[in-house]
Length: 230
Image: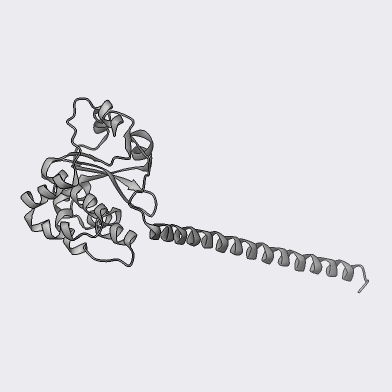
């Protein structure tokens, strides 16, 4: 975060505390206060609040484990003019990375996300999935796919968000034990796919090897027959 402040001295910076966020929701977004306070995990509040902050104030939302590589004024000209929301693509498992969010004030996309949060406030089998689906990256992805003006949302590529403009420290402070269960499942699933491909490849090689042996035997038989030795 200090790198972002150093590279952007002309920008105002504000670090929000949870008490301030709770006060903001209670004062400005009363209709959401009950849901906000009912979230069982603090990270859900941290996820949800970014939509409200960006809708009300606009600007850059950046997680504390993000460092900036270039000034914002060098990055913005590279974004299409019709984009009012900028978010990053998360390669695995194909969702949106909400650790960096850039938005104009009174943004319709942020409003759509705000009003979808209540309908997604459910328990999804385990803590990691509950956060992921109710307020986190998958929530943002489904909001994007249901949003009618997707052309106004610019999704940064992996190279842009993790190489050119920002560096992600990947603290994962909200991950619980079930996160590693998900990661193990992902690894096992990937491993199974590799094994399946190897088995198919081996099967094809064996078929070709058997076919070549049969062909060689037939050629040998034909040669012996022509020589009158059969």
